[in-house]
Image (cartoon, rainbow, N blue to C red; front, side):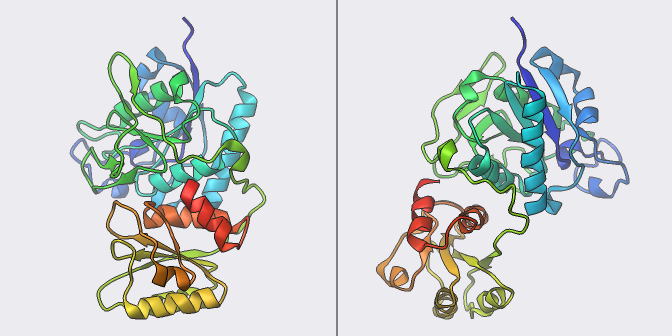
Length: 333
């Protein structure tokens, strides 16, 4: 039986990083050694040839803290070009640093034009580290991307033998291998030694016809995140507005409240034409809509965390400024 053809686009990150020795699993960014590109990374994991015909695709070799709108647009273009060059692809893997991995994966889920499997993976330990998770995570991601079961699920995140939906997953620990979790709903499935096991499908997924095309959006609408703290006075909200924010996500107290001063500042932002979305800083659970906040024009992010609410709001504002239309997107995407 022929092996599936899977492309691997390497964007850098810990999975492709090299430390100064096997015990260098924290300060490897200072090792002076280059981050491996996609071809180098694939060549160092010969076991990949046992599960797929792997096509490495050069992209960049950067830490994920350097990833933003420009890199997202380049990545979408690289995915499109790779698919055009290899029409027989079964799926595609993006290797990525874990700091912003969940945001990239969610953006891909909202922008990919069809349902070919795209899997984002990374690692908590550098490639050269003792007991690194880099090679196994890459093999697992390639297996999932090449599996027909992975179609029609949106972008997926695969680490630590678990398969997660891009919308639902978040990084929950700075250093532990089991860092990526889907707090409210759990994993979609697992990558076992004998098979890829999928147990459920995500229901919050835009159909391809409704996804966002950002190819011509060189500069996105500015969307900032204001983090609620005890005694918060709204100065950050007003600063974001002064800087040109077209949207503000409030990382509010659970289940979606702010301090009175923050609420006043956010209301000022709405009156100035800014779209305000209430999320929660709690890490799981919905931001609940309330009459008082709704009357002030605030929307709610449902159970999207603040960083993902920002991604969706940025994309939404490329299409519409209508609050009702944006609210529908947050209820569906």
